[in-house]
Amino acid sequence: MTLEQLKVLKEGDKVVFIKVDDLIREYHNHQIGDEMTFLDISDTVVNFLRNSYTISHFSYDIYKYIELKVVLERQHKLQSLGIK
Image 1 (cartoon, one colour):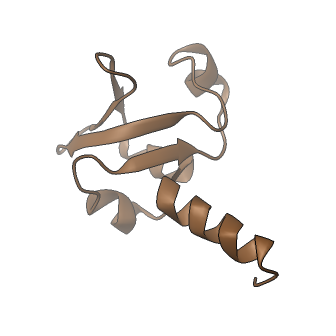
Image 2 (cartoon, one colour):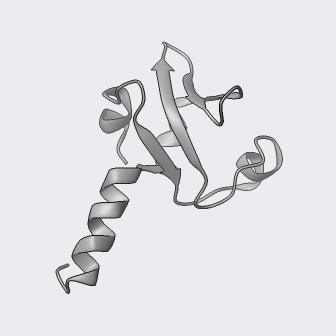
Image 3 (cartoon, helix red, strand yellow):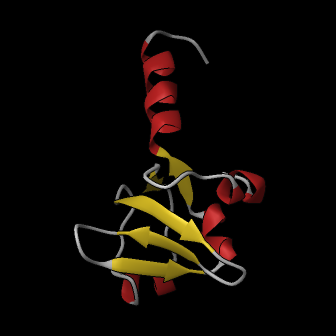
């Protein structure tokens, strides 16, 4: 995902971790493949809903670690059809 894509996410968009670092793993307890729901973005943080009642706050750099779920599903579908 790019920073520009992060800035235009809509409330309710699903994202998936495609990579994690020590901070994300240890502080936020996220792993590759974990899904979150986008809530909102402010001047300083990006907020995601982890489950029904846990909000995770991230810096804008989170865009380097996530991708839209629909993009990943589409890529997998295309790969399964032999299209790259």
